[in-house]
Amino acid sequence: MTPFAIAGVQMYVNALQSNVDGMIQRLDILMARFPWTQMVLFSELAPYGPLDRFALPQDNETLEKFQQAARKHRVWLIPGSMFLKNSEDGRVYNTAVVINPEGEIIRRYSKMFPFRPYEAGIAAGTEFCVFDVPEVGRFGLSICYDIWFPETTRQLTSQGVEVLLNPVLTGTTDRDAELAIARATAAQFQCYVVAVNGLGAGGVGKSCVVDPTSMVLHQSAGQEDMFPIEIDLSMVRRQRETGMKGLGQVLKSFRDRSTDFSVYDRNSGTDAYLKTLGPLEIPHQGTRAGLHVDVPSQLIPEAPTFKGQEATLPFSSAPESIGTEPMPNASAGTANPPSDAQTTAAPAAAMPNLPVKPGIFTDTADSSSG
Image 1 (spheres, rainbow, N blue to C red):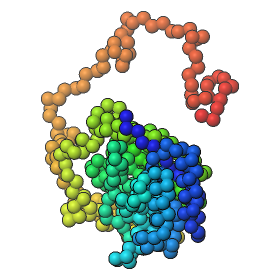
Image 2 (image 1 turned 120 degrees about the horizontal axis):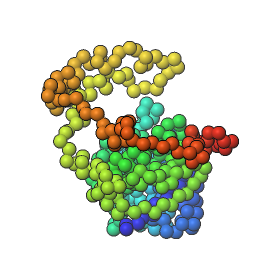
Image 3 (image 1 turned 135 degrees about the horizontal axis):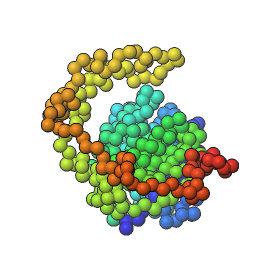
Image 4 (image 1 turned 30 degrees about the vertical axis):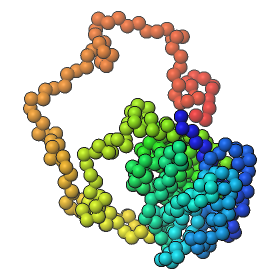
């Protein structure tokens, strides 16, 4: 085994005042209650909330406070993310830092997919975040909406990432979709996913930890929650070699693929349909966008030809030598039994009423909501 204890902190986030002292206080409580914790992850934009008017310089006193807290508790710390203004280009990025137990900032990561068009004015990062915990394993960082784009996780896991850390700020009705994405990501890329959402101005909660088999190890509800979970990195390595439950070996299958995907070549023309979609903008009241009658075949008359397409024969051109499919073996239970077979009906008392719905049985008064 290669055990490692990660704790998520799902906490109330205020949009109009600093949450930094509250974060450090919760970290103190967490480490007092669960001193075996080795890494702590807060939610996206937890320190100052979702308003970019509170953007700070790249180097600031808040980061120094978090560095001191990590050093005090000898813990790896990812204190969510903050809006930071780049001193070179003057643009604002949604940036997370990784602080080691010595209190050193070893990585900075800026969100690659700001939630546009709603996060207008926030610049997109272009560099991935991968870091190693010595003698434990390799970790990667993505922020909230990044996980909706599997290419980001593909890049990270292709570089050996075994645990995906995903600070989130989702206060909208699509949080359940994100929970499904977290499970799918864990299975597709054979990794742990630790997704921490906030409360109040920081989200609707429902943080989760998912293992490489897509099993949910923990899911928070809608209240404050500190959840230390011990994961096992050897489970990731075993599954990547033998497959999930001895089945799909997806990373090796992708490595050994016979096809390259032209959609990622912006000059290939494969994405012609995407260019017919309207601008990336917030819908307005009464919008009629998407209600036109055009279908892809009308927008792009010539469908692309894919490799191997010509090898597929239409049904009408199947060789005449293919005979009629034989009937099932009558004695195999898939057809009527032979006419000379003896059948005896079971006594009525020996045949219990079959369930119509979980908790609801025919001819009984027993029922449940199902």
